[in-house]
Image (cartoon, rainbow, N blue to C red; front, side):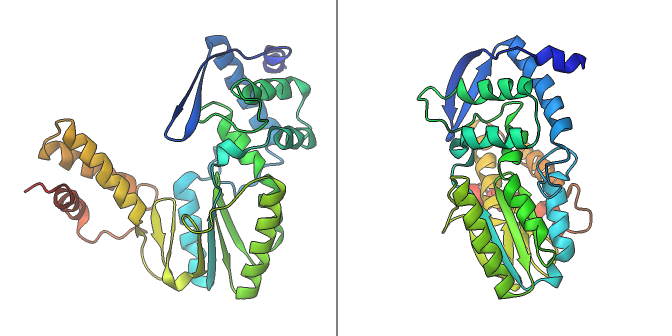
Length: 290
């Protein structure tokens, strides 16, 4: 009760707004940050019956490694896969639809007031859509927005469905089941005023061909390996480190750190071929370092 009184009648105050790497970021006053943290904990409690366990980015739902483990464990049993990603997810969230989702989940007016400020104050152009990245409330609101998709996919026990924010995968035993699921996905995302990538960040086909998800390539009857995108980011960060004066010893330490991340939470599931030396030599060659 004390936490709810702490947010009742309170309004947020925005002190700065900037754009970086395609996302909007907001700076809130200290009091507003405290209100957001309190509101986040209350939303976690109130939305627990509503939010799906298949939405893996939410705290306690498994995270990146949990999502990858779940798919790797069952992929051998499914012949077909579809992987989708929403175009500009945070920038596309419709305020009215999100607030209606809170109403349907019986979230109180005190929290809806905080969320309304959180959405509306950075919306300088009054577009009625979009949400800042990196804020306290963004992950849980981002999880809630696609909850209709989570709930619909969970109804079909013939499918495996896993989502991490706006990146999600469906496994199906038959092509017909997959097509039916894809049709439902497009219907729901269209109703939520979202667009899905059709070429990049999209894959529809047989699981035997392997597919990328959250930095890993998942393939039936094989161990996980880093995806091409994950390797590109690995090299890009190593290049920045080298350009900032990092020597070969520093690059070696970075390779060790990255290798630990690669295997962390996935004991025995990721290929160990070549060990960390393989990736250290890989970045040296890509950077042209003798």
